[in-house]
Length: 549
Image (cartoon, rainbow, N blue to C red):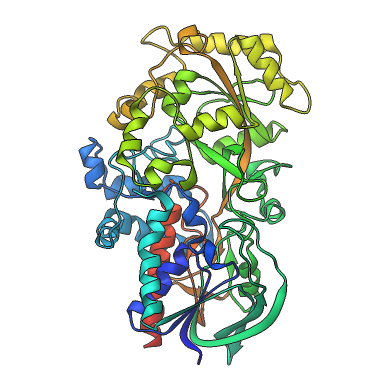
């Protein structure tokens, strides 16, 4: 045997699994098709948001959360309704208990810290038993994505120094080796060395072949979000027509290759039609990878219009119901929509997802973070406003609509119709009373201390000159996560189609739908993707270590 265990994929789940195996005294090989610069995978680029329940940070912000409420929210979002949801549901329950239990302490013991203001992401579809977070649960890592990766990369590199772990980059797995019905290794292609920067596409020129053996193989290779053809192929009818154009929220190496390879070896893929994409994508004016998209993390105040200028119906408000809004937008026959807002709103409510778009949090700069409280939009947001291809800034509404029409293939917006929508909304804001559900939601959000301080602008008329200038933002669909994947039991063992474990094979992270083959069900509550990598990677690493003996 070349090692006790082989981990395929150097993203967050792979790092966690490899660290657990090595710390248990097992000899580990960690493989990845990308160069060493991309160690940490997608997690590095993330905002570092983590779903936690009844945390000290929540309590300090006046949030009353509980395991029961979190599980109610999870079930309302997941909407489990299939026979194959047996293991995903069990993984979901185990994960929610983890998020309400040892998750914070486990991470904190490794030096992980969170920003004190808890965010309220994915606020839901308006039903107590439906999709969404009833309370703020989005804990942003101090250090964002790199801060999440850091403790596990450190543990892995310490294991390398001890001789317990070997990292092999530019090793692309092409097949799983089986012996007597058990997975006993991997084989594949050695790719030419690459000096590309993190996230940039690397070559696929082969310079050799390899075959490695081990008692256990752990697949932690990610999902399909970087291959839009695969995304469209799996796109379900409930989400409308697949977008002809999307921006890429993940690098090209998120290619889904290991799903088919594992399936060919006998692993069972379930829920391939469950996926998670965002509706607030921007074309990155300073891209790292091809067609690089950045997501706006919006506050609730922007007016949301479809491509024809119609206001999106409740509960399709910014930050409330991602997939419900996605389905509505795709039903219009167009693959984009619009935010209409003011300078006052962008200053308080616009944040951009990603570690590189939040240098203050990523660099752990208290001085820079405090600067967010000053007037003006955060520097990365202002840069997008100035340089981004999706932004229009104007003093008057007719000028704004003219600029919006100039950004599209054909001028679909009628200035008079847009004005009627804006004026109707503005009339509802003049009183403390309203029938406008979005305005009610804005006022409700400001009752939460964190939103009032740094996230939600005071309600005002869009056409108030003192709040200007007016801003419009063209929003594209942004590809992101695979919610289905390899079916696994609670020991992270990959299952065959008959429900029995495939000996020697484990899976964790996005390739396993973050656990079980789809623990999120049809929807996600945010902060659960990184958390799913942490939990499933830990579970897989510990279970494989015990099985190896």
